[in-house]
Length: 189
Image 1 (cartoon, rainbow, N blue to C red):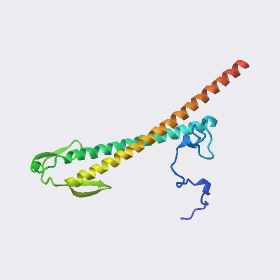
Image 2 (spheres, helix red, strand yellow):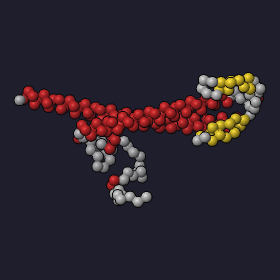
Image 3 (cartoon, one colour):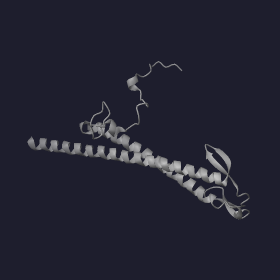
Image 4 (cartoon, rainbow, N blue to C red):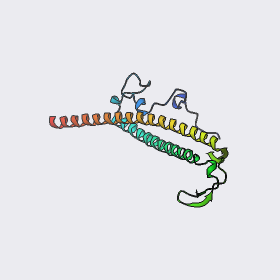
């Protein structure tokens, strides 16, 4: 329980109350002086080591966002497939033969017993019996939520890619200047 270390000073704590996190390129000053947070330095003034650290951090953030986007799109397609399947649950299909999936590649024969109710996985291991209409609405809401979230992640990805390209371009310029300086030094010797 007790720690021999004192709590971190206010300046060492990450504050979540100051607004959205803008990413490492913005923390380094981005390219625009006007939108840089206080205490940041412009990319052109950062060392290659600092730029490389920012670039690596952006790479990690890009990978994480791409995984999130993939998971959102996957979940979205599952709910869309569920919505499409619910269309076939009409009274005329009651008693008809069907294949019941046990796994993604293993099925058994079955018959539609009740086409008016379904059991829906609402998340975290909870299942609720619903009418087909209510299940359609649930799937529609969930699909819309996932679509909205995926759109937000795509925006974030676009911004991170822009920051990444800006950092990479700045690094290339610094490398080129270093090479020019080294060649000038060699020819001047």
